[in-house]
Length: 158
Image (cartoon, rainbow, N blue to C red; front, side):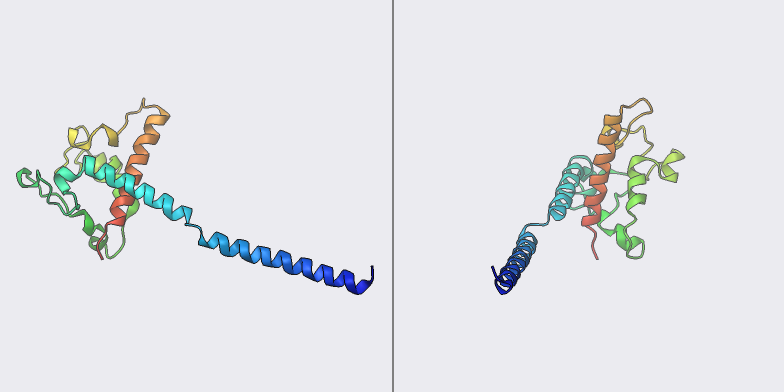
């Protein structure tokens, strides 16, 4: 085989590999982004948790107008305005800490106005665990709270 033929074959092979690489990149870029899908799944889980645990006071749209809001002593917060109340920043971990009870106000036993102390049933067992809780129980509680906070972040009005 002469040298010229070998060079042409080599060029074709390089071009073929390059073309396969380009097609692979283009093809993969057309697939749905799995991270977006996973994020949406977390938000949907948080929405379900919100509807189950929070909507009765805060309303199905989180505006503070749930069916029991009128009979409460403290008006429920409009949870779609958390970002606006803090200068355009959603304080993710502060919201998390308020729900799980590690926020400074809830540690002192004051709780969130309207929610009462951590022992009040409004918090529900799904948002707390005691010191003897299993690792699985703690992980489940943290997961529910994280998905709820992700949902709240997703519904913030601009």
